[in-house]
Image (tube, rainbow, N blue to C red):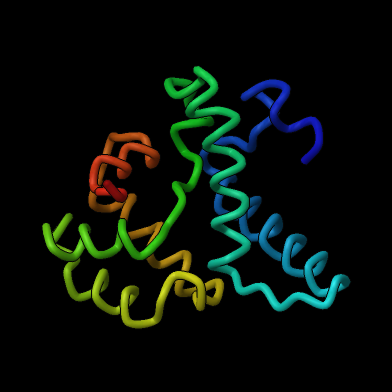
Length: 137
């Protein structure tokens, strides 16, 4: 990933992002294990997604087609609001994700959240889900 931030064209094609992201998560988890750390897919995804968001979305490439396909950072603040607003009509799925806790997600659980975001926001960049993140005041 060391050259990834050099150019958004280095990112996977939108149709390949999920497979690439899965491999990135596996690599992060394996690297963490070599240091005695036990990362889940949720934790690995959060690290990757914040890195990519900072480099590309906040770096002025937010309109690039490959950047629009990047997974957004997932956390409890976002999941709470997605549930509260019943975004995409997926309240049951958002509540299930909240119950599991983002930091405990396995690969399937994490990907279900991403797929529900994608289904809830057709024709929008995935990072636009940030409109539901209320943050802290």
